[in-house]
Image (tube, rainbow, N blue to C red; front, side):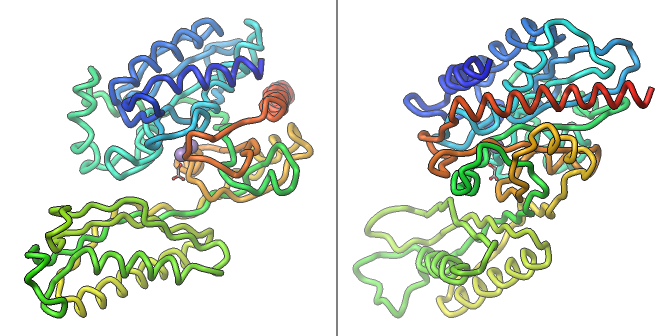
Length: 396
Ligand code: GLV
Ligand code: MN
Ligand code: MN
């Protein structure tokens, strides 16, 4: 079964906006193909399939009776630009395989497998759109931003409220690649996630004066890109040796972007993460103060636009303990990557299981999963479902 999961991941990697790479952002045209393939596999496994208004695909496998509690197994369908084949999609296909392995046997709880339409934050700079629809935490400004994409994809944004999770939910479980080097360094295939680091994402825009590159003396310029470059160097230097603090400038926009014109505008993305919220918030303020000081010294204007403030989230202790029993040798660890589980954890018991990432590589085409690790995760998933079944029996 684990080989089917991995080959399906690779098959879905072919649905892309950019030939030769896997790039699939929120409700982009290739998502139609992913919905069709995932939907067919869900039906084959005995699920009823629907697509909600935000573009999450949902496969429902009913329990022994109509008012049974519901276990949600999920992860995301979207990717970063030039992604690997496993980030997100592996968790969805693992859920389908686990339901398929029940071979029609009904549990005392229903299972809903969800492929979230957006987690990466690429199309709108704001991540977790799919799981936020489920949690009911999409704000009005974001809904307005995403409505044209929803309409263009053929969905009805007025029905977003119906995407919200309802009924008696047993919990949420997500299988995901680690996307880092920790498990490999410990020679371990699996990790149980205890907490997911908080993240702040914002943009800094510098507004200078575009002008001639040959005639404007160096001390008479308002160079927006030079100011942005100072911020990039500052965050990179400052975070060296700062333990779990990470800060990444991964995106830059320059205008007019010509070799003989002084840049009049530069906009950079900033992504800050730490498992202590106070550290993350304080460093965020430090970066903004530094940007203001640099801008003043270089005679450019500066403004910051906040895109995400996501605190650190702990997984549910009891639910995680069940996963720990199902995967008894798994390492207990914190996740530096964000996951849909962090959006759902405040609303329902949540647990996560990580699979080792060979070479610690992710968000890259060479991202990889070892077949034996997929097999170990699948077995842990089967045991997890059986543990829940026994608990439902003993709770009556
Ligand atoms: C999601 O992949 C993230 O950026 O953590
Ligand atoms: Mn992911
Ligand atoms: Mn990712």
